[in-house]
Length: 279
Image 1 (tube, one colour):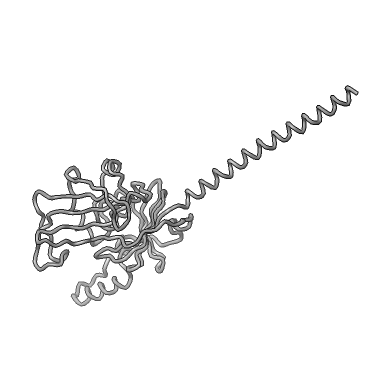
Image 2 (tube, helix red, strand yellow; image 1 turned 30 degrees about the horizontal axis):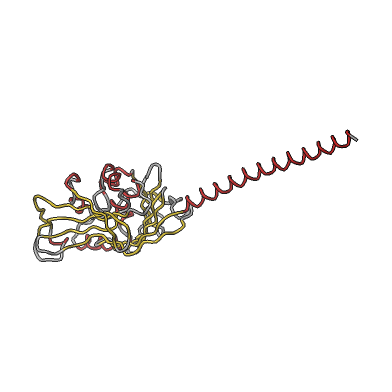
């Protein structure tokens, strides 16, 4: 009889151990799945911004913690940059042509034809920061007040003749993913100053939203404004470098559309210059 009871206890003990082992395995598996799902959700979390530049027109900007993609709706130019190198690639899907350059060079030269805007905020130590909302978006406004006003050419303003810029407002989001690389790519795309890393960390600067200059005649002039921003899911294919594209020899081959280059070539021909644009 004692032998039978011992056998029953042994069977029950094995069953109990198996249940505990199964529960432990299931708990570990469930935890792994939960963390994997969380990591996957984190990977596709991002934002989409609609921005308008005074010269280059309207763009859609897709940004995540690991990269940024800019699609210009006006010129049909696209730009991609990804961590960790943040190599910048400009390309045109319609022509299957691309041009790439390091982030450092991109921040130095910016978009061709827009480099004149780099003159603003040359001394970040003289700026002030104010936390506010930009059309409902949590943001920080960097204010610059110049000691000596700068003369700005007529074509950059709405008034006749030249006028003086006496200050600037530079708006940054505080609610979007803000890797320094993405911020630098977008600022340089709009030919705006790239904030120093120290200022970025100090004020929690995210993506540039707007840039406004205040003029001596009492008027203001914007070069960039954000008209919409929404949270979206971004998969790996949204922010990806192009493949199989022809490498351009010069950035102008990509930054300027084929139609615009043809117009410039015709203009050069009329002037009897005899050299095609970008060649």
